[in-house]
Image (cartoon, rainbow, N blue to C red; front, top):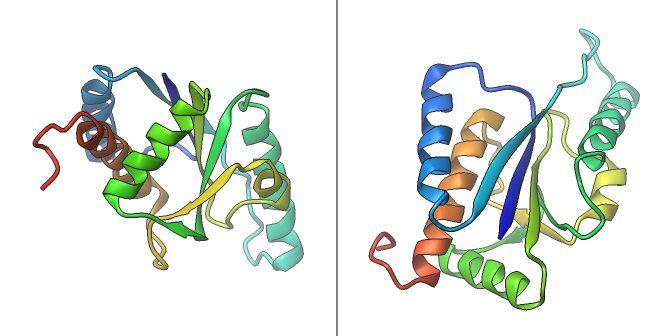
Length: 159
């Protein structure tokens, strides 16, 4: 199994980096899990909707360049389907059972995901109707993937 979290922007604070590295270490027991950072598009000081659409498209193109043809793509979207931790575990198991051994999980930039990227998505996942800092979302996503694997194996991490 190969899971790549493709995220816009770099982690700035050491505590986020430490948390991401801890979950990547834990996840190494289940397969190859990595994080790919995509540079954030520069936004004008007072960006309008047309500017934001250009930003989403440009970031989407950079993300799409990191996605392979055979990847199963999960985009994190406010409007996506909410899943419980158990349902996420079942979803990942189902993806693997259907022969997809490479999964790309995408966290967009501050303006969201471009239509170009949304069209490539195989599944839109929502963690909440709330908006989270992208750095925090990276940690939350990795923790939930770790929890999903523990649930799938019937281990005691999930309570």
